[in-house]
Image 1: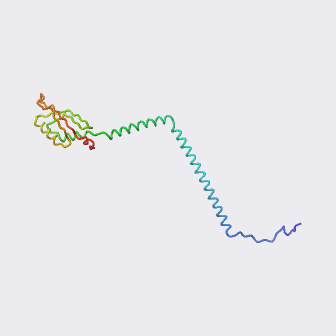
Image 2 (image 1 turned 180 degrees about the horizontal axis):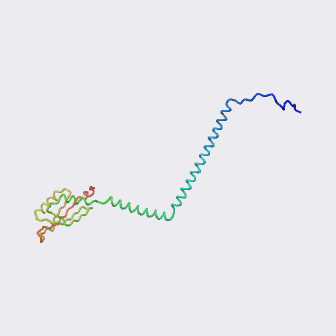
Image 3 (image 1 turned 60 degrees about the vertical axis):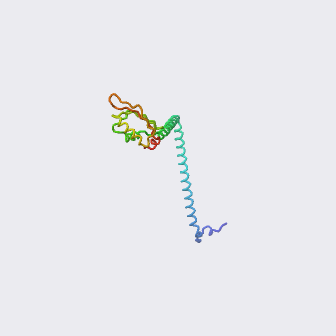
Length: 183
């Protein structure tokens, strides 16, 4: 049987003190636990967010992979090929309109040209024209002979028409690089 005095314990006992490092250790453990739980929650929600975004992109991809979109894609591909061919053709196109300014700069005031045939690739030019006299025709020929871009000048079909004007034909070669250098 136990003594009644032991069970009553009326005499206060001294309190057991924890070591001085115990409280900071508990606080540090609690903080680390909270940080770990926070990181876990953050990464969990981030992963689920990325997963939902991936599913959205997959559904978008499946939506885009329809027969109508494939047909549109084929049409766009054909148009792209045509544009590429056009750009290649346009880049190799030789510009002929500066030739008119060139010819205008070397034209005698009394000479008018009625017909022009120009091959930009070879530089071959055929002109039909008229003037009021043989003198102005000879002056025009001398002017064209003095131009360094012109070679192989040939005069043909010189005739006097009913109105008294001199008609003639000119053919010559222009250096084909003339057409490449023009902007």
